[in-house]
Image 1 (cartoon, rainbow, N blue to C red):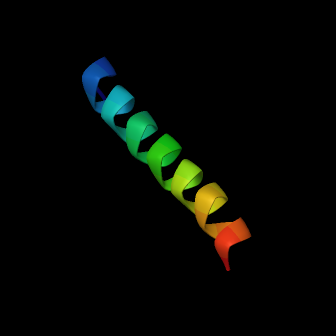
Image 2 (spheres, rainbow, N blue to C red; image 1 turned 90 degrees about the vertical axis):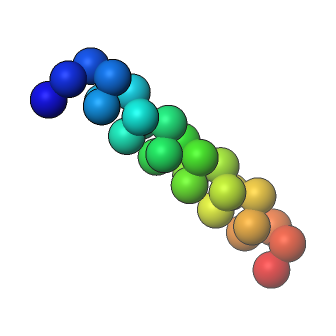
Length: 27
């Protein structure tokens, strides 16, 4: 796996994580 691919995956993980953290209190 290339470093850039790992970075993209990491970004997606952080994004979804922050989204769920923002979503949780609103529900």
